[in-house]
Image (cartoon, rainbow, N blue to C red; front, side, top):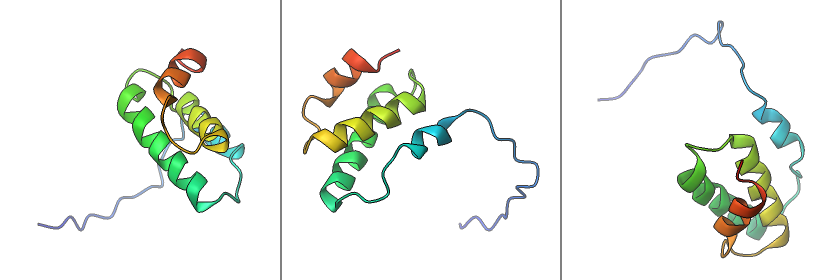
Length: 84
């Protein structure tokens, strides 16, 4: 059964500062970097999404994808530099 409910967003309250993490992201990245960032976010959210702020996860994924070509070692990198 499909959900045809339209949500009224007039009373939407913005909380947090996750948008600041997006400000540092570059607009022009290669397809390969995009895939590494996407896989990094997927991995970090699954592993640390419940216990860490989204901003640190996004910053780590951005840093990692700008320097690396795979996600090998990402979890240890996050634990060392971003785990708060």
